[in-house]
Length: 186
Image (cartoon, rainbow, N blue to C red; front, side, top):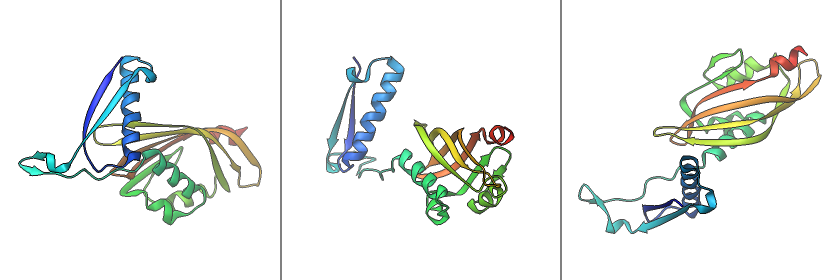
């Protein structure tokens, strides 16, 4: 029965503390094979006046947004072709790749590249997984695509995986794998 105690400076939101507890529980479950209900996580909060590093009192770090929410907001904006909203989630050096696209550096490049491939595409998302690294966060989105080919024929049930890399609340990379080429040839 794993038990973990974490010391935090006071000031973080309840939402962030809940995300932290869930993430730590997931890590412990994965490493120890303990069932989540057998894992205990305590968050101890301390007033910043009761803490110093380098002889100076410190304040809590800036809260990061929920990575899965940022990615889903971006995908919704892209599906609606709301490029301005989508762009708010991107780092300045954001790049993306799609099957057959090569590396694209702007949303406008993606829209131009996709015009001859389909009229529109929508996603049905089945799974969103978040992996925390030391420097970056990786978010995997799995599901199926539906939409319309350039000739007006509809398609559906086409598998996809989107892999996003995030740094400091911004998307820095998107890699896409899907079966659109297989669906187009059948």
